[in-house]
Structures are given as C-alpha cells and as structure tokens.
Amino acid sequence: MYYYGMSSKIISITNQKGGVGKTTTAINLASALAARLQDVLLIDLDGQANASGGLLRNKKDYYPTAYEIMMEREDPGKAIFPTGREFLDIIPANEDLNGAKVELVSADNREYRLKEALQSLKENYSYIIIDAPPSLDLLTLNALAASDSAIIPIQCEYYALEGLSQLINTLSMVKKGINRSLEIEGVLLTMHDRRTSLSYQVMDNIKKHFKGAVYNTVIPRNVRLAEAPSFGKSIFEYDSESAGAMAYSKLADEFLRDNDTVKKDMKK
Image (cartoon, rainbow, N blue to C red; front, side):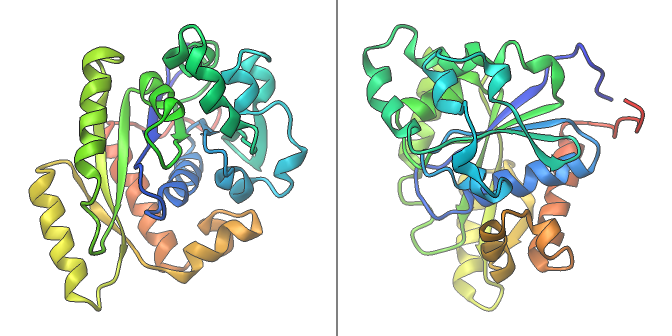
C-alpha cells in the first residue's frame, strides 16, 4: 500500500523507434493505474507532445512545461497540471522541448536535469511515468537517469527487433555509468494481429530474446486505440469495451502484481 512520504517508482516508456505504441502505452497505463487508485504523474518528454494532446485538449495553452523544468527555468511543481481524471496529473510538453536537445549539450549536469527536478515531486505519487522521445538523445538519457526501470514496447511486426541492440546497449551504458539501479521493468508486445502468423513468429522471437522479461499481456492492433488521443481521451474514456481497453486494463493489473502494489484506501 502506498502512503504519503514514501518515494514513488519512476518508469520510462522507451524505444528509439517511432510508431511502436510508446505514447499509447504511457497514456493508457497511467490512466489504468489511476483508475486503480494509484496517484500517477505522467511526464511528456517528447517534443511532439502526443501524450499531452492525448490527455489535455488545449495542450498549447499550458505553461510551464517539461522544457522549462529541464532548463531549470521554473519550479517543477508549477509544471504539474490536473488532467481532469482523479489521481492522474501531467507535466506537459510542446515543441520547445526539441530545443533542449541542443541546449543541454553544453549544460552542467546535463544527464541529471530531470532526476533533480523530480526529487521534490516523488513523495506525492505512487508512480511517475515518463513518455520518452523516440530517439537515443539527451532527453532519453535524462529519462533513464531519473528512472528506476524502463518498459520497452515492441510492435509485432517484421522489423520489430531492428535497432533493439542499440537500445539495449544504451540501457547497459546508462546502468554502468549514469544510473546503476536502472532495470528493465518489462517488454510489452504491441500491435499484435492474431490473424497473421507473422505476429506470432515475432512474439516467439522477442520472448526468446528477452527471456522472462516479456509481459503476458499483449496489446492488439486496435483502431479505437489509434482514435482515442485525437479526442484528448484515454482508451477507457473513448471506448471502455474495446479490445484495446481490455488489454491495457490487464496490463495495469499485471504491472501492479509485479510491483506487489495493494490498491490504496479510497480515503488516502
């Protein structure tokens, strides 16, 4: 059970490939955990700001954002905004965050800006989920340096394993030199199409590659999942009966079992 005064667990959703369901996972896992009475902070660390758009209807109206806290221009607490969903807050992003990739190159303590910013926030949340950008740059390094673990979404498609060796090398490098406590939280199979044998072949290959680290839950290819963010909604608000909603609900339950988290009392 989570009590205030305890430090939160910080998880990065990361893969340098785009289009693997990273932001979809960040939004819907965060939403599902919040629905299970866990205090959750979602951090949009991608300059495309898709997570912000998926939870906030007017994302350009929000200030400060992740950019300001990364550049140490604003107090991190001022960048937290309610999503309108109980137990779920967000630190949004906008296109300014893309400039941080360049500005951080010559900055002091450049890999630890996010970690330092989160120190004052950790006692207020059960989980902090970071939607990392689809690249292996300083923003991603900041996300991994600040995290206890990483969830890696991998699509069940032909090029699924392409570039994964680079990601694993990056995680290993971060663990050795920047964040010794970083672990792989789990590998999440996404965009599974049960009608094709290819999806099952890819699943088998990934399970062999990441023995024991792959979630039992598999996220299906689902039109409703793709549509929901354009309405500023999680899949649970958009279509709670869809296959995508049921899958992310199962993922949240599996995640909580793995973390041995008991649903906190409604009064807390």
